[in-house]
Length: 145
Image (cartoon, rainbow, N blue to C red; front, top):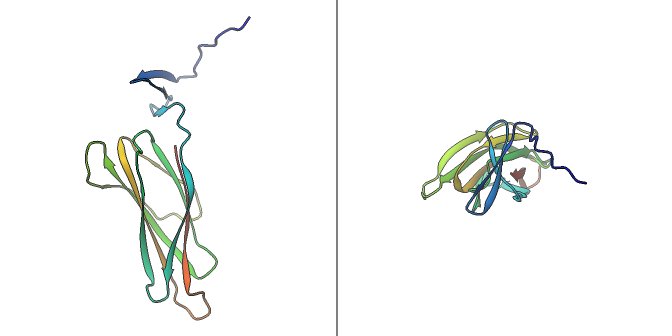
């Protein structure tokens, strides 16, 4: 005989429009079955353009509530500078700044809610010193959940 355990440890389950959500003890709501998206981005700066900002756009992000970024300096003369996270609130088309990240080589969690699109503006710089490669950049790993 199988017994159902109803102790959810302070969490609750909700249903809305055919989707199921779990609400944690910290009141963060997450869609069940949502596995998230993740990857690695390279933002390149070159000696003749020593500072470069590149925008990365992620669409259909309204079901996500957090983003973990880790910005690293590569070993080829580049300097990671920052990543600024922007979002368009659901039902709008104007980006607003959510958070600027300047911490390097560590996971940084950005919490957000109800944004249709997320834009990462990653900035890299090149030291321009003799002996360094012509291209240099920032390596950024990301994971939405």
